[in-house]
Structures are given as C-alpha cells and as structure tokens.
Length: 449
Image (tube, rainbow, N blue to C red):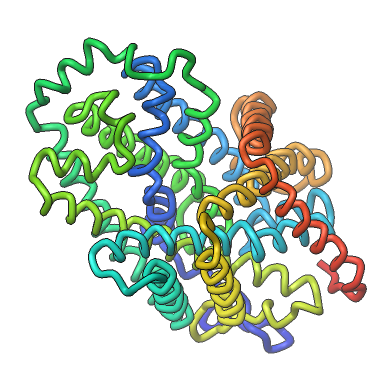
C-alpha cells in the first residue's frame, strides 16, 4: 500500500517512508549523545593504562555489533513499528510485551527524554540562567518544542534529526581535529610516564564496561522503524552505523588523551570543556558546551521519535489504551502517542525539579529495567527460532547460537551490575512494573494480535 496507507476498516497504518540515510542519522544521533563527554572520566579512573582505556571502547563496539546482528535477524524476520514490543509479544505473549511497553512509557523512554532534556538545560543555564529552576524550565521547553516538531509529521521529525546530526558530527569532527593535531602539553607527557599512579589501585573493570556500554546505548531503537524503511537492508544500516560510531568514539578519546592524558581525563568532570579550554581558552569551552547541548537535543529527538512508536503498538493491542494506537496517515506519525509521551516526560521533569538529585535518581531506576528487557529481547531470538522456525529469515545471525548467547550473557552481566549500583532505585522500578502487571489483569478485553 502507498499514499496514506489505509486498512480495510479505514484506519491508517505506518508506511515505508524512511531512507537508509534517515535511519542512519537516527541511529548515530541517538547513540552519539552527551554521554561521550561524561563517561570518559569514569572509564579513565578505572583503566590501568591508556591501552586498556582505548581497548575498552573497541570491546564496547564489538559487543554492540553482536547485539545489532541479533536485532537485525529479528527486524528482518518480524518487521514492525513496535520493535522490541513486537518481538517480545511473539516470544512470550501479550502480558509480557505489555510490561515492556508500560516500562518504556513510564520509565525507560520518558525517563531518558527527561534526562537528556536536563543535560541540555544544565548547559543552557550556564549560558543564560532563568532562575532557581532554570534547568527544569529549559528542559520542559525543549521537550515541548521537539515533541511539537515530531507531531507535525515524519518529514519534520527526520528532517530535524538530519540537520541536528550533521551539525553535531561537524562539531565533533572539529573537536577531534583540534585534539589530534594539538601539541601534547608538557604536563601531559608527565602523565603518560606516571599514569599507573594516577588511577585507583584496584580499578573496577566492571564499572568501565558499564559506562562504555551506556555510551553505546540506543542503537536498538532502529528496530522501531524497521517497518518504515522503504528500501535497503536494516542489517547493513546497523553494521555501518555502529562501525562509524565506534570509529568516532576512538578518535574522540584519542583527542582527549593527546591533550589531557589519562590522568587529566580522570580528573575532569567535563572532559571536552577541559580540552578546549586548554587549547583555545574560555571561548572554546563555551563552544563545546553548545556542542554538548546539541548532542543531547539530537539524542532527545530520536528518543521521542522512536518512543512514540512502541506506545502506538501497545495501543493497537490493548483496547483501554486504544487512543495510543491511532496513526495519522497525512503526517505519517502516531500523534496521540507523541503527545502522551511528552506529557509524561514533562511530569518527570517537574518531579526532578523538586528533588535534590533527580537526574541521578532517574538513572538509577531506569538502568535495571532497561537491561532486563534488553536481556529478554536477546532470549526472544532463541525462542522464536523454535516457535516460528518456518518464518522466512532474510538475515540470520552468524555463528548461531554462539553470538546470541554472548549478547545474552552481556545483558545478564549488565543487569546484575546495574542492580548492584542502583540499590533502592531498583525497587521503585519494580514497583512500577508491578502496577503495569496489575493493569494487564484489569484491562480484560484485549484485541487479538
């Protein structure tokens, strides 16, 4: 079907409108966010030397690539706007997939939107403060603006994403060039000689891996637009995107090392700003602040774009939430889902404004839930190989079942590690999941898949 894509009952459904470049910009935009300017410090503090520091970024890229191959098989065999929600429904049933979609709506996706908006708000507040609640006001305004852009339609949403990502990559390339071609400082040379004394006596490899994989997070969002890719192969889109991301991360961290050294990275809470301040002074630090803000907004736009699509899939299956399952054919967008998602994210922003450390609290209760469902999606690949063995699979994970098991083991490790770090925050997430589970029983009347 083409045009507005009507079903027999007259409703609208998603149609293939995204090109390969559109999807690559979505993936790159959501992954290369503000995390690359925050994670290097923790990773440097937990790295015994520079080789480990760079090598762990390569390991993160390899693990992400293995996960992408698993998602590529699922997306090729079962393309759907619901992404992970659709895979989990086929493998484990409606109630489990409902829990996933519920978690995205109330914690994972909306929490990520609020966190990214706060990152941008924090940096904008440094440039122009709006008072005691400056960060929250900026964050709320950004969510409203980006949500409104996506409500206008898929062309506005993807067009904005391409523009933001191009500006972001241009800024990052300038940052890389400035760092790689700069003359290492005398203090940096000294750092390289005494680096083993500047890091913890017993560095935590687990903590380094956690932050690396967090920085690579987001590539799985491509599954939510698999049914909207009008041409090309999602497998190669994922592989090429992750190779570009891994290369970019290596170059950025090489730049940081060249200017600051491992000890300097570990001592700085704002690595990019520190590097540019050493190279160009305060003006350079201001420019990197704008780049970090742009990176956060770029990731935010993709998070809003893909998050609404899982809510749409949920609305198609559960009649009490049917208003979420409306697709606007003219705009090629789930408008109701976008508006609902934006409203919940705004509530989280306002909640964060009342907390002394709301940003960290949201990170704490989001991480365990994210890794639990990521683990479940990896297991669904094995389950569907058995339950839906006759379904055509244009792409199959190589070295099956070795690579899927490696991906599952990584997710299990990350789930354990995140539970160990978050503590009480995990109980809040579990409470929200329990509420969702009770709703599945109260809903009663469910639409057939």
